[in-house]
Image 1 (cartoon, helix red, strand yellow):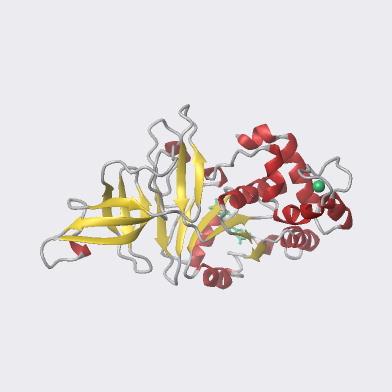
Image 2: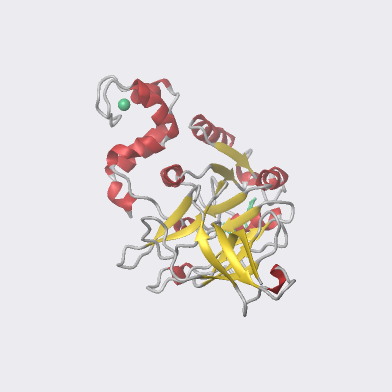
Length: 322
Ligand code: GDP
Ligand code: ZN
């Protein structure tokens, strides 16, 4: 007897997968049936964690999905259109890319003002990348116990810079158990991607959200992702209070995109908005007369920090292309 259905990929181990019919959590194994190509895809893994797929499974008469096991896996027959996806470029010479995750409801970018000290231009590049991919972002400012009082002004500046650009900033302190309930509440009903530079407390944060999750255990090394025969191991976990988590190893796990110079400003939401008032189109917002973006920077409605990041990306787009 054959059963058919639609499920979400919750684990991608390169050649085999685990599927689950969200919002239930009933992971069962699956393999690909022949070759499935996404339209125009040169991706090394056409199926990614978060993909919604059609599956078929042969089970004994009267049985259900519980009869699907590694010896009798389901087969994936179709990948549904993605709402969004995040790509990482392979470092090998084939120029292939690697889809880390698809259909992400929220990317939580975990940062800390200190230890490690945040570099705003780098954060801005990550934000641009999320904009390009069409993935909604929340900035999670962790370790606030270290600087809520000691660097109150800097903290205020940080909020001003990013909130005026249209981003939401949540504050957490794992050590003081502050902001954790709010974050846990925010994750409910969402497929959440967690990303952050090593040391910012991402693992601690995930563990605080759900003590049964421990990203440091079984976490794969970045090295494994860079070989010629890339096998990926991205996995989605259920948060016991609701929602799903995909943990990416480090910020480098999150490939930056290639952009033409004139495209960069389109992905700074506050600049895109202001640019409607520029006298020239296209406008690079550098030397042109009647530039509404430069005017907004002078008036303080666009922050100097974000504008400087933009200028940095314009000058330095070779690095940006990585
Ligand atoms: P990851 O590399 O981002 O996964 O970071 P970890 O979770 O391993 O945390 C790195 C270090 O930061 C550890 O020593 C944690 O104890 C510490 N840490 C995590 N969260 C906080 C916090 O809210 N406040 C402070 N002061 N330290 C934290
Ligand atoms: Zn302009």
